[in-house]
Length: 144
Image (cartoon, rainbow, N blue to C red; front, side, top):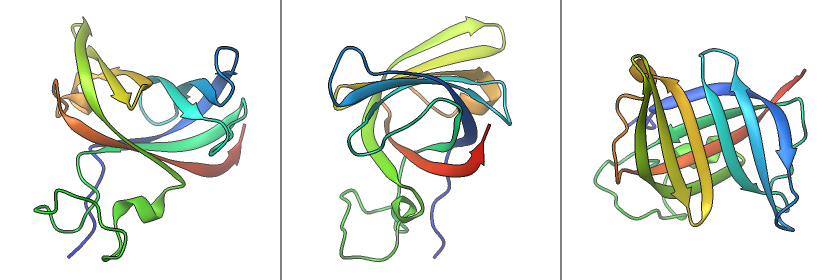
């Protein structure tokens, strides 16, 4: 069986990192390279430090297991989608907002770490309110 794919994945160039409010948490703002998408994402700077101008691949997926019937992640089992990424969070979409006729914003919480993704409706049309999802992040070798 093959690994599941991401419902959304793109490379983002990080425009700013704000670590002012909390010691270990940084809010990154980025712009996608491949699509017309804007991202704001809270991350744990201690576990995954990020710099301005850094390039990250960020994916969103509803599952990470090869077996779609697995409802719980098991580290002792076969390879999962998480093995291809450096930093993974699990959370829930708590708000979906229609911006313009062709744009949509998704708002998700990953245990209190927040995400806002604004993109073309065609790219984020598969996401819905109360949907559980994984946010998967890996470093790109490109530094702008």
